[in-house]
Image 1 (tube, helix red, strand yellow):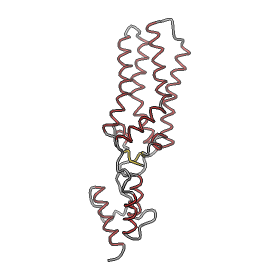
Image 2 (tube, helix red, strand yellow):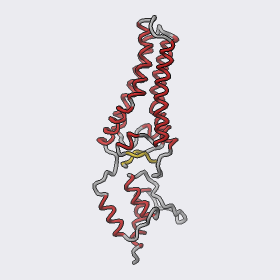
Image 3 (cartoon, one colour):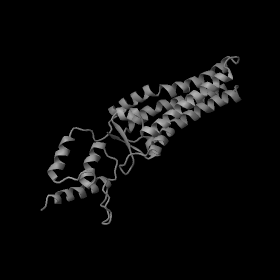
Image 4 (spheres, one colour):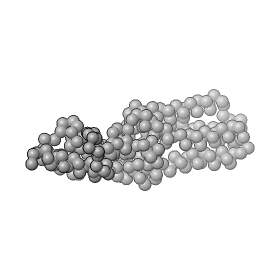
Length: 236
């Protein structure tokens, strides 16, 4: 038996275990098509023939041994730390949301308050902040908090999530919140007599923003936004 025979066997086992079925004979893809931890993906790339292929099973065993204590999935603790950092970084758009809803509230209670110029500035501040984070997610494939939190975004085939996917994911997070709060502000302007409905919509937007935290912790590897955007969270 040659040194490469065990590697070929392990390659077939890895494909079967991680992809769920054997590949067709004519499929010579050199990448495991599954969302994996970044460090595990690098090892499996070598096993599959990408990068610098392993010359023996002993080399593979040494790399596997070095990864023994590294995380296989994103834990709730790691996700919670990531969310805490996100909350700190998101003070700009979140602050914009609350300031935008403050002026309509003042106008409902004190109609003489709130100049149009102030409302325009606050709307521009909020939308600009949200737009900034969407662009940030596009440029940095998720953002600073993912990098510092040791989390990467991957597609179902194990490749890096595209920048458009990352931007769309950020859009999916913010669009419902901004829509609800935007409707509440519009309603306060058009039909101020329905102040109760304004508070219902505003409260729904704020509640949705708060619900993102437990939703992310229930399934730290793939939340609702990831299901829509087609992304997975994996350890870096």
